[in-house]
Amino acid sequence: MLILINQNLFLCKISESMLESNIMKRKILIGLSWPYANGRLHIGHVASSLPADVLARYHRLVGNDVSFITGSDCYGTPILVAAKNEGITPLQLSDKYHAHHTADFKSIGFTFDNYTKTTSPYHNKFVADFHAQMYRDNPLIYAKSAMQLYCEDCNKYLPDRYVEGVCPHCKENAKGDSCDGCGKILEPEDLLEPKCKLCSGSPVPRNTRQLYLKLSALEKQIRDHYDFRKDTWANNAVGLTGRYLNEGLIDRAITRNIEWGVPLPADAKEIFNLDANEFNEKKIYIWAENVLGYLSATAEFCEKTGRDWREFLLSSSGKHNCEGCPGAKKASCKSMPPLHYYVHAKDNIPFHSIILPGLLLANSRGEQSYHLPDIIVSSEYVKIVGDKMSKSKGNLITIEELVSQYDTDMIRYYFLRNVNDKKDVNFTQDDFIAVINAELVNGFGNLVNRTLSFIKTKMDGTLKSSKPDKAVITEIEKTFTDVGELIHAGKINRALVRGYELVTTGNKLFDEYAPWKSIKENPEKCNQDIFTIVTIIANLANILSPFIPNATKKIAEWLSVPQDDFNIHIPTKTITINEIEVLFKRL
Image (tube, rainbow, N blue to C red):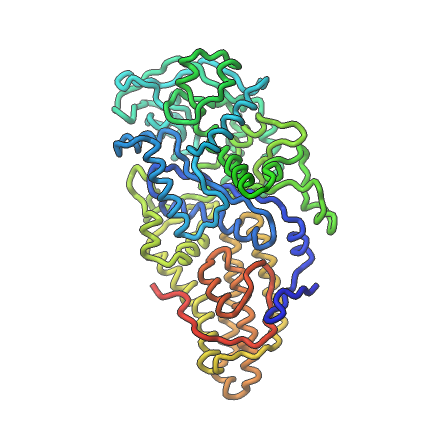
């Protein structure tokens, strides 16, 4: 099927499946984990976050309706600790770093539809309303007396991150809410040898009533969802979630005695018979409100743009999978659910594979319920010279520092090329330079610059329209298909590696064609050979655009390539090369 896209320059060949994708305009939610607003973003955030931007750019190109959202996580103990250290209020601190986060993400090319913060009035109201609805006549939410650590020296209950100690499972040092050593979700009172982070004193357990989510009663539904979707989750998400389920889910507190957080909805006071002191001293536990930010940010985006939030956030209770609809039915399927991606580092896995589904299932809306996570893209850690990065250790490289030294596309390429769900990335400057020089400078940049420079210097800047090699056209089509399928599946590093294979093909052909000889011996063949290579380059400008948008935009401008879809383009008119520049400078 041939569709004329730009009659002056290009014919666009669109496969039937791609055309259906454009007709469908599926609702795509891409939720990126919310970084704490207690310090500058570092390269670990880049490594785990960039796959989300690739997904958003790709789904827009294929014609889907995208909600790419995240924001600054402004509540919780990490903010209180940092604010105390800086001598300012938690709101002042979180606003300060929210501004930094906004700038940092922009500097690396993120294309959010809504970048917000958990202190926004919209998020607070959404979370309060969600909890109020979840509390009403719901046996899955209950109040019970529980121990919470209390520091007698500080005269206050200690939230999770105000407590440090020894993990009862692996015996490594751990925070009050989780252990980085073994990945266990913890309660502060689980820790051995607990210490108050504020004064280093030994807190004591005190009885206090909290609200609980009965995850134990939701275990079968969460496991059913896991079994249904695990083939679309990252390897580390499948392994860790399976381990939690096999160990058995336990009920989790959804409130804490803390002064900084989303207040309980007014209904909670009467529903759970809380006295005034109990009600006022409690806030919604951070893990029971920040994951709802994906919903609140999408609802806010929809409100601002005239969309229906229900089309993004709700779906029927049945497990309809539109991929199984044949041909034309797929394009017009009324039961097509939205598609939800969740992108984060591996320490966030249980909050998205167990906690978020638990909250969504507990707030069932009947026939149209909140849509559960579809594809989890979770990355292993980035280490610096073999050591795990940590804000508390001060062992990190900020995005601001990296952007000041290197081209943005180089940064994007390196981490998208290396981040994965199986092993940690060990970042060193030597490795960064080696990868960039070998693949972007000597590989992609060399292909583009030597080809276009040849046209400019040896062909008077003019390349006549010709017929590219049929085998090359077949390879380009196959590359589009493979890269698109891999991105759709959330396998971002594999998609980039697959796309780069076309760069290798282009460089190999340039050497085989030896145009520096054929320009003298057979100018017509030289023109056809260079036209074939330029066709590769023109399509690489689209294939690689979700990964390295700045460089591919330059190529598109030099060759007048449209970048508004994800399909093969074959030049149909004479190409004129004017001023070009070195695409990537050697490091």
